[in-house]
Image (cartoon, rainbow, N blue to C red; front, side, top):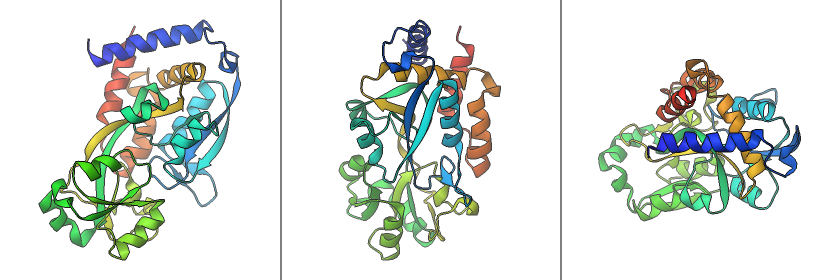
Length: 288
């Protein structure tokens, strides 16, 4: 059976159960409180903090819509490090996470991801511009033995080490990565291919200190995975509410709110439309 057919059949069953109030948890009531975890580092165009203290980006718009459509009284919990997303879910500090959370089999052993997934990205190398030609010539295999900075908790960390043989230098945050690259301790930083915060093409979202550093164009992104909204393992009630809200944002074809946010924040930052998102919107919009 085609993967899209399986997804839509699953959504039909989930949404039917939600409509019938089949879940007996707090999330079966008309409205409920919820703590939503947000990775607080600049990950434009998905999330960034403005000078006035308010946040903006594709996932900010998505988060706000989910809270409203799912009738959740949301309290935002800022998560300073990438690894905090999983930890906060497993220890109950947050109820769900919206934060460029790549879906992987290992993560699905510990937490649940809500379908439909809403985006996808691969791992890309960001390095000083002057080194691009040399790095691209060797390809990903050319990173073997080279020191590469990778955020702790990054989904592709183990594969970068085991498959491509890079000497992975774990970093807690982007500031640490900046320091190590400038000191020559890392040839670059591996991060999601959708992060305009690391590109020279979008100066308004560029991280302080990253001038002259951008994505190595000669190294196409690898290990592409979907982004999903994550909940604690077994929290079916909340998952049903969020699934219904996600479908609401994707069911109007080209006029779907999620495509409008993509156009404003992601395409507006210089990226092409995401094939996975468009395929999901088309499937949901045509589903009866």
